[in-house]
Image (cartoon, rainbow over all chains, first blue to last red; front, side, top):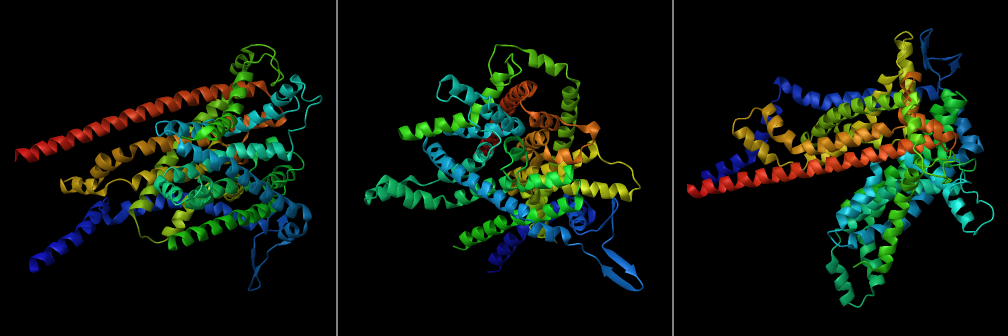
Length: 316
Length: 283
């Protein structure tokens, strides 16, 4: 009896002992403190603190080139002065509102097109010969390693008025005048789909390749057509991949700057471009800061939804 | 197994992914200044690159920054990965994880703007000295790249078998020896891929760099971006071709080395296991 108790005791204490040994890097737990502290401090200093600077500047009054302090202590009273004019302007000026809506719309359209192209793509990849699959995956991820800027620039050469596509169509006498493709919503959407398509394909492939083929077989045996089995079994089982891929496409596209700048035109309003113009062209730092703060909301909303969804599926 | 539709879909998809890169390369050998009308084969744009001081100095700066940012972010990312995987409970762990992941989702215009305004505030605080330049670009890149490095290393670290570490400790290794002899070799592959990934991210970054750089620290992407904005420029095509070539060679060599290392490690493991079995049988 006492024997079993001591064995159980030893088993329980074993992992604890292991952990305490590993923690004995340096006296007084300094190893642990620096492992956590150094990266934490770096990111606090160079990621969070700067954001609070932005938050402060977005509500600061300017005095020439200097920003006034938010807190003012005089005559025994502490006053906090927040200049909300920038935010009020953001909320009332239709241009900003239009730009937000347009950013969300372009991001949503890009996500849907990526899903439409990417889902069958990932599905067929996962059904390819097992020996072929690693090559297919590598071919999807290889463009990641080449410069993203250069790949977007490449579309300029394809879609330009004197670009490859127009020259080809002219040469084939399919058209008489070049089609205007560059600097339109079309060219920008193509650039965004092209850039973010692998972000949709890879998580979907990861889920689809693990799908159990015997489920489809069972559905077939029970009389379902392949098409019906696909909709009733494969698609619902890959929901996590659809959600993850859509997030990975939507979040970067909604705040994208380079693609709208290189491939977009006057009709393609994107919020990141507005921020850039406020900062670099209008040199209105408080306004640019207010736009930045409001952009965070644009990113947070889908993230919260995503977390909510993940918790939901875990509970189930 | 995938039918005709599947095959066509895949071929069309890969065409879509590779067509722009291929045309970029083809037109870098074009003689005409019109970057999309083929007039004849020529290497003049390559010659133009190697006589273009702007490009050459930008390449040097980019490589310097990318090397420094990748090294720093792998170091910070390793620490962060250890903190997340090995320390299940510490004050502010949720906030820590949020901090590590935030740069992955926050748009770069926000990261760049906030860092710039922060550095401007620091400059005022320190009495008007100018901070902007290589240092600020490096810090900006490092804070973005750390997130990617941490994700890559964390994935590998959480798969490391803790019992091997415990065995090493039972055999008398001191904690640092355990790290150096057991943990580090086990995660070395992920450290290498994290370094390569962050190196390419830094080498590719336009937006944050544009906010943080000063006239003396123009990186290659910033230069390319300013030229690409003005229109088509055949030197950009030539630069692109050289990068694609270098990346291709780099990825091939890296994967080759990694595969060989993996095989060697598996062989060593199998040998050790065999020896242990033989020893057990002999007893």
